[in-house]
Length: 371
Image (cartoon, rainbow, N blue to C red; front, side):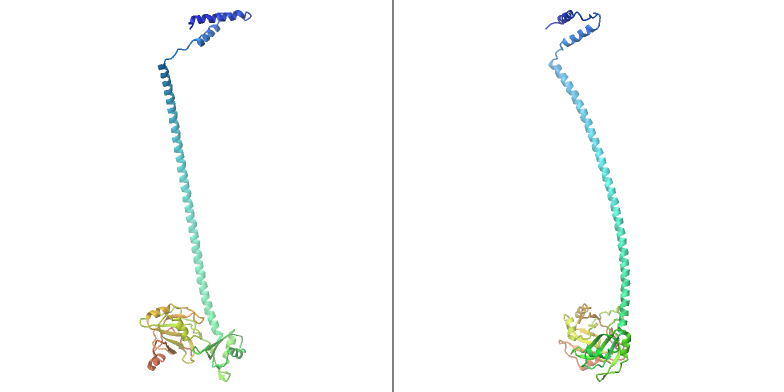
């Protein structure tokens, strides 16, 4: 290794040689600061750096590593703080969204409730209007039915005393001169089914019915006719009247019966009940069937079962069944029909049933006899 002095000398010699090789170049003043600066640079570049021992190297590495670790730790802390801030902001955003959703749900539920309330009020109003209209319609129908019944009764005529051999065509031919005939109801005996000489004639107008009434006491086939205004016994004047059951009195009233009904028809209707007797209501003066009957049962269980058969169809008519009112006296005749299980009654008992004392007033839901 050369010393510093020798190196300086070499460098100076080289510099002199260069300057001597280039005489054309202008000579620089030796007092200028350029040469010493260049020499310093060359010396600094040539000067060897002192060698570090292993311990010093370790210390430097350790110090460098400590500094880097501190920097990394600081950076890591900053990153963690930033992450925490981001999480807090995210949580705040989520909470805000949840609150907004809750508010929206509450508003929607309140709106739905208001809509439901409005719908309910509308439906209630509609129901009330419907009920009012139905009630008005029922009243109109009832009034219309009553007026129709009155009109029908005014256009009908009762004709009795017709020869048994006559048929419906003969009756129509006889009363054609009065006016147009709508219907002729020929009444028959319930036992035999034969014509009983009585007919209910329905005309189109009241004037025709009045002309038919003018033929009262006229002759028809050698027999004198009895023509009267028709009185309907089928209309129930007291529809709200409903008799109650009385202990020990197992009798029912059966109304709105067909004119052609027989005892067997009623037995079929009450086949599940133990029937003891059947009485058909008959007019005392004319002997006409009044369209109702009384049925006696052997026990109260059969009575209750029979009451459940109200409005059943018998001979194409809905039958009205209700409890019979205990009677003190009746002015109408009766046809007593004991069943096969019941022994026939004596003459005295039959007389008491058919002809009770006339002084007592009847209390029943039977139609009064026409005079």
